[in-house]
Image 1 (tube, rainbow, N blue to C red):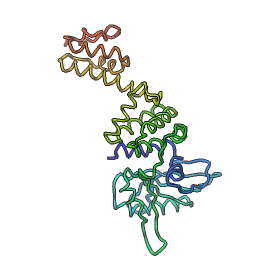
Image 2: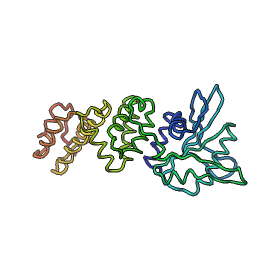
Image 3: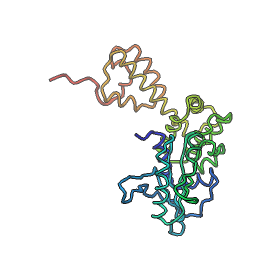
Image 4: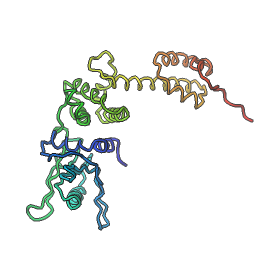
Length: 299
């Protein structure tokens, strides 16, 4: 089953196909031809043979209405010997389909996997060789300039994941959240969850501390909103947990409205009230509720 890391990395290319060209040009220093548009193309390479070949994503660069370059994206989270047989098929099939140069780019979480992925694949006599390109942590540029991060938000995410142990990590975080302020809030939340899940524990702790420090001059508007939402949900869940522990029944409507509450001060008071409550009516959360919470009697 695909992991969150695998799926979210692929989602970056689905959201902005030109990111594939950015990685080749900005990170790996591979020349990319001039293009007007970048399109997500079919990643299915199955032909008449029964074996199914499917890449994670394919991006086609278009110039003056014609395909000029294609990039096969493979999110490679582990060493897999079978890929050395399927990757040449991907390249050959796409070359035959589009009639333009094709590159295969493997996105790798560790340098060991990146070194394995970058080994050329010889498929015949001298000259018949596929050269995969691999992007590991060492190839990801360090982005600490907020303006650069806003221009390349997906690159800023990879930069944070690859370099979060640097002494100047606060500058990385500042650039990251400044960039997240420039994209659609749903995607920003997805990417923040992704970064928090993918970082090792020590780096995640530093990031969470950065997000929680509201007086920090690096704090972005998005980070403030995101952290406050998370803190409010945690407090609401704490109220419900205390009530559950005290054996006080909490109807579904009450739980829904409790989890929707974002008033931090009120939630803090409710935690204290829940600790001594004997019944649900002891909480002032019910004062402005339009619907009653008493259970209907059995008929």
